[in-house]
Amino acid sequence: MPSRRTVLAAGAGVTAALTVGAPAHADDRRPGELLARMTLEEKVGQVFVSRVFGHSATAPDAADAAANQRELGVGTAAELLARYRLGGIIYFAWTHNTRDPRQIADLSNGIQRASLARPRGVPVLISTDQEHGAVCRVGAPATLFPGAMAVGAGGSRADARTLGTLAGRELRAMGIRQNYSPVADVNVNPANPVIGVRSFGADPRAVADLVTAVAEGYRAAGVAATVKHFPGHGDTAVDSHTGFPVITHSREVWEALDAVPFRAAVAAGAESVMTAHILVPSLDPSGDPATLSRPIVTGLLRERLGYDGVVVTDALDMAGVRTKYGDDRVPVLALAAGVDQLLNPPDLDVAWNAVLRAVRDGELTERRLDVSVLRILRLKARLGLLDEPYVDVADVGRTVGAREHRAAADRIAARTTTLLVNEGPLLPLSPLAHPRLLVVGADPASPTGTTGPPTSVLAAALTGLGFRATALSTGTAPSAEAVARAVTAADGADAVVVTTCNVTTADDPQLTLVERLAATGRPVVAVAVRNPYDVARLTSVRACLATYSWTDVELRAAARVIAGAARPHGRLPVPVRRADDPARVLHPIGYGLTYPS
Image (tube, rainbow, N blue to C red):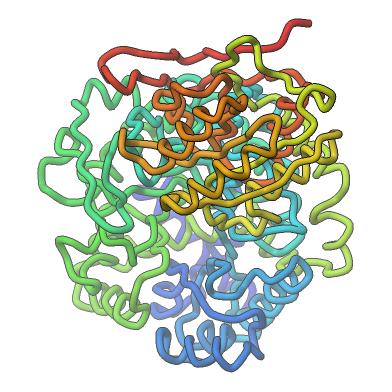
């Protein structure tokens, strides 16, 4: 066992040797010590972030243990850490890591115990995707805030920072110290199937303001925000989970549009940045995805924007990064491009051994690996993991889903609902004039663990506001029979509230439902629960609201606006183009109606 003096001297030597690739930092002493003690295999483990199945680090359910054996070659998280000495673990709901807040805290502590029990053990950086809105991994009773585009409609930097602070406190209480949020993509393509409402909007300066505010909030809570997806995923009609998107922006357009939020985030001290599996020929004509592109990761992000924090790949099991190279080449090429963390490879054993082999064969130098490991260890040090890797499970119930956090979520949501159409005006509805409401329409499956479905949540909220509201789900692709049932049900209602989710074509069956309901003569209020672009096709309704997501907090806010218990304050953060002439704008950025004072 080396003496403390030997370790300190070795750590200082490593730090000095790395200054060319990664400038020395004031907090390098302890990270340098840890790096100096690591074997090559341990360094390789530090750059990987993997999924693992189960609610417990040592005693997962039998089905989860079997899934671990099948996908990872081990039975438990503890065994995974022992074999690969991982630097990070990512939590998902589908891997059964996130049953409830106390269980999550126990799992986090179990993971830390397992890692620290190994020789030269290092705390694990536990991460998740808790964007809020459409993408969350930890559901209720954790506080679920409005999503990014809703926050963009609210336009409040203070609200964005509050969201980051309170959401960050809840994540940290459960042992999660890195969040893959906020989304810095500028969503300028209404057909974007993967970003959409996950973006704050289409104005790069407004997006930059809100991205930096959310990240500041997470930093104040002791959680590393991850700004994504560099160099910008906002103008694509292809989902990088299932295909390989191509962004045709010129270098000048990229500088003026996509780069703006990332430049602001870097200047504000972003702890980590996530790469995108997209092709941007103007930035790198090689045909490589940005995740594997040295001109993009090192040339633009590191050198042009001056970023020296942790760069993490988007998930390596996504199609966008696997179309050109095999799973053994992708992690090596990502590190060569300048990436630090390799997220969720499809086959961890293949990826881990590929990186180890690349270093032993000289394709990657150990010094290059050291640069990334040192960045990761610096981040762990700044987050307090090296001093306090464990969480107090008794504190979880006082923090996660705290009453004041839920009240703050409601206050933020109250400023996001956007009124786009109000002929007559029809809204607000009154329980005296329209006592019986039918709430009908799309109930998209929510990944957020909210109460749902949306029609039921809206009906319950409206009933609580004095109406007699009945819910009837017709789905996102209502059949002729479902439409007929809704029309029949409308006969017994004084007004109809219909939810829509991504009405993109003239023959969308949701549009048939809305038009048939309007033809009954009953007043129809449409609530676009995902993309606000729906309003361009909802020409038969007398009122239309946009909520930007279908989580409970946003639906409750919409119900208050419908009932007149709150005035609409939201303004469109994206332009809505005409359905019959997409070259013309129907509603510009900043558009939104309100009620008279």
